[in-house]
Amino acid sequence: MTSAFHIRLAVPADFGAILTIVRVAVEAGDALPWEDGVTEEELSDYWLPNPAVQLETFVAEGDDGLAGVCLLHPAARGRGSHSSHGAFVVVPAARGRGLGKRLCNCIIEEAARRGYTSMRF
Image (spheres, helix red, strand yellow):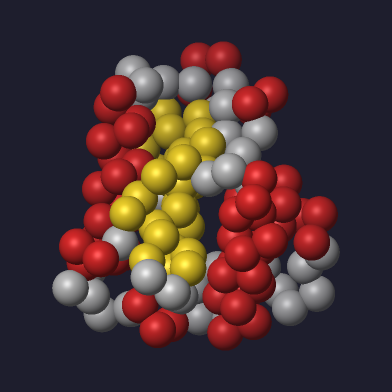
């Protein structure tokens, strides 16, 4: 049942949990491109909010804490800034309940609100 999850913008108190979610996905080796030796700094640069590069991070919060994370930012600068980039991860315990689809839809809707005309994942 996906209605138990609330999707919202990430706040600093979420950053540790976000990095843990991403680290678990990296170590599983079946979805994200990083190798096991990826640094915390590299993951932070990619997944945590950063207004300087228009990187926004959203989290899905459930009764047991964060269950997923997604991000949105321009796919390129200059003439490519009309296109957005999105990525998302769902914790293993929350998979199969439609949360990944909700996170994907969240960033598609947010991209449209921000004036992006295309998206890549």
